[in-house]
Image 1 (cartoon, rainbow, N blue to C red):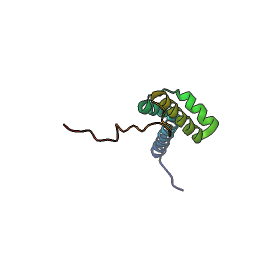
Image 2 (cartoon, rainbow, N blue to C red; image 1 turned 45 degrees about the vertical axis):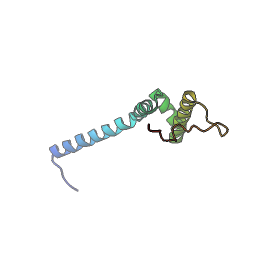
Image 3 (tube, helix red, strand yellow; image 1 turned 90 degrees about the vertical axis):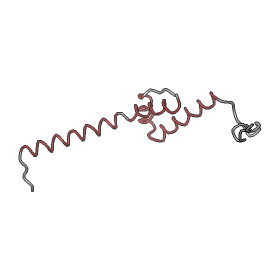
Image 4 (cartoon, rainbow, N blue to C red; image 1 turned 180 degrees about the vertical axis):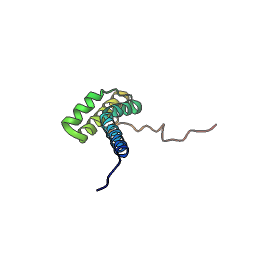
Length: 99
């Protein structure tokens, strides 16, 4: 077995502690980062506690379902409903005429 000096042991313990602390902080901040991303990309505000609760109850697929449900709700709220019977919107597809 390798014998380490007290300074090397202390340095090793401190380094390991810092890495474990960073790992714990990264896991605890995941719901907050998800809600910030969701708000930045879609404008939907959600509590990190809600995300953590859904993750605890249903896991990763549950959070994915929550995300998709919120996106769909926001999309339906913002724009007109597009159905197979609705007229196509050619404004975005047709090139602009130049005069």
